[in-house]
Amino acid sequence: MGDVFKALADPTRRTILDELTERNGQTLFEICARLLTNHGIGPSRQAISQHLDVLEAA
Image (cartoon, rainbow, N blue to C red; front, side):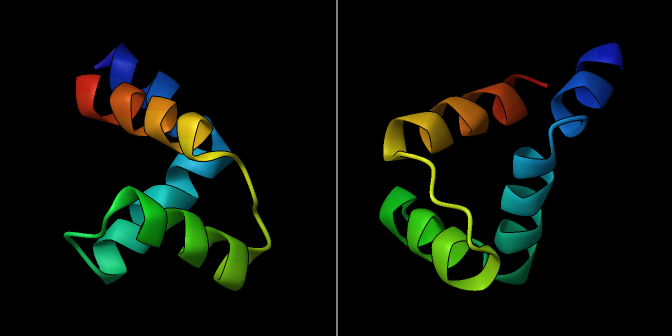
């Protein structure tokens, strides 16, 4: 359970989860585009991929 809280402690990961909740089944490119368009967050695809790995592991 501690891993879940650690994963959710990052605001970018929470935003990614919000986007996935709103529209499931997005590609990595779509997630990156929505983060930039909707939230002004512009991390690299590699960074988003790492965030998704952490969320999946938790």
